[in-house]
Structure formats: structure tokens, C-alpha cells
Amino acid sequence: MGKTLEVTADRSDSIDDLVAAGELLDMRFQPGRSSLSLSAAKLLHALIRAAGADAGLPKVHRIALSKLNYDLHLSKEEVMNIVREMFGVIVELKVLNSKGKPAIKIGSLLSDVERDEEKDGEIRYELSPVLRASLKNSNHWAVLSRKAVMAFQSRYSLRLYELLSKRVGLSRVTSEYFSLDDIRALFGVPYNKLPRWQDLKTNVIGPAIG
Image 1 (cartoon, one colour):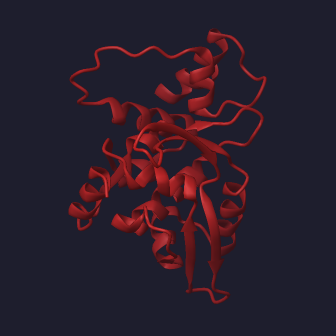
Image 2: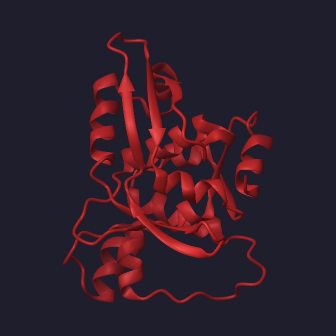
């Protein structure tokens, strides 16, 4: 288990703490594929938080629909529609390979999801091998505010919060360069949209800050 999941276990009783792996915060969306909507990004945080220190294990996790509704304020069917959306999202995550060397893994975020028919049932889910591999050996993390994450009204604003949170306190990093393609991949800008920096600044960075 990496340090990130150890911190997750240590902070499991803190209601407002969302411990997020740095690798997840730096995930890149694949060109030509869907990115996470605001609701999907919030749901992903909720599912990983519910998995806790076991998030890196190949196991089925459980969360009550009522608990999801507390944060997301969505009906059972709305939650499942977001889950369906998430199965269409392909991400690129940094992992350690079997030799302990840095590698890139590409795939989906969820492997399997099952829900109860009754109104107050639960959702049973398994995180994907790509996501588990990234979380299992992660040693870089940020502690996000659950209230802040759930309060965002713009997916670009939430994404900027995630990216900046990962970089707060990095004493050895004074600057970081991002190409236009990096920015597009990090924010999930649709393929062939906003090709110029001015377009990204006006339609992504500006609204994210505002």
C-alpha cells in the first residue's frame, strides 16, 4: 500500500476530507472521447472515498444510495445515468509497472456496477484495474474539501481546484510548463475544439477561475 491510501485510512473519520491521489488529479482524458461531467467527477470522488483504504484492491465496494444522495442530491436513476456516462470515459493515468518503474496506463474508471431495485438500496461497484493500479502505489496526494468539491457548479472550476490542490506545498517545484495539448487533455476539452491559447483562456481557464 502506498502512502496515499495510508493517509486515506488515517483520515477516514474526517467528514470533510477527500484524500485524492496525485496521479488521479493529473489524469488526462483521451482526445475524441468523452470527459467527466461535473456530476460524474463528483460521483467519482464519492465512490473512491467510500472505497477508502481498500480502493487499490480488486474487490466490490458498497455505498448506500441515501449516502450518495446526501452529497449529490440525485435520484437513483440519475446516479445510474451518470454511471453509464462514466463507462464511456477513457483516461490516462500514471502508474508503477510490475518492475516498480513509472508507466502510463489507459482505460476506464469503473469495471462493474450493480444497483438494487428498491428506492433505498445500495450500489455495488468495482474500480477499474487502471484506477486501482494508480491508487495502489500512489505516494503523492492532496486533501480536498468534500464540501468544496460538492459545491462546484462548473466542471472546469472543479478540475482547476483539483490540479492546483495537488501542487500546493510542492516545495521542490517552483514552476511547471503545460503545452496546449496538456491543458486540453487535463481539462477534457472536446476534440478539435478551442485550438488556440486565447480560446482556452476565454472558454476554459477564465470560467474556471471566475
